[in-house]
Image (cartoon, rainbow, N blue to C red; front, side):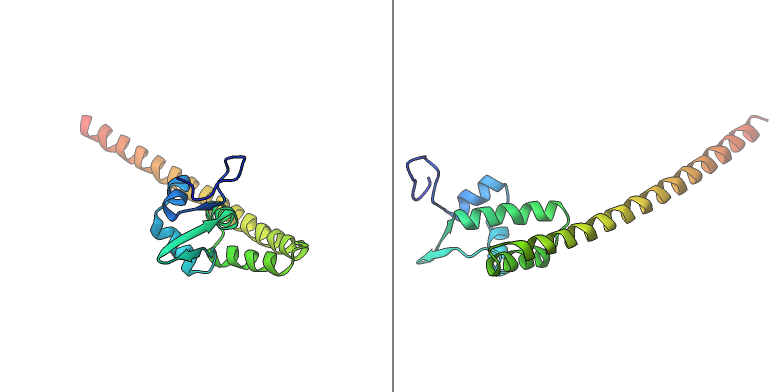
Length: 139
């Protein structure tokens, strides 16, 4: 149950369990992101209270992970955004990171294509050898 709700029924704060359920991750993962300084919940005693900013950051962390961003890269983007609300610096860094990620992915794609060709060649050699063995067994 959301801890506080405005008129439009969108919660203002969230528990760790709510965020874990919403994003289908463990509470341990959320605590790890907190330890890394990527999200900063307030505390009421031992209870963590996450706000909308923490929720958005968690969503961005998980999206970044899917896109291959390291937590350090995501943290750097957050730092730049916090320091420069105009976000020009953040966008320039983001474009630089995207360019590097694209280059890495294209390199991986090239590597995969080479490995696939090599596997196809080995497979054809195996088929030829197997056919020759079966042919010689028939004689």
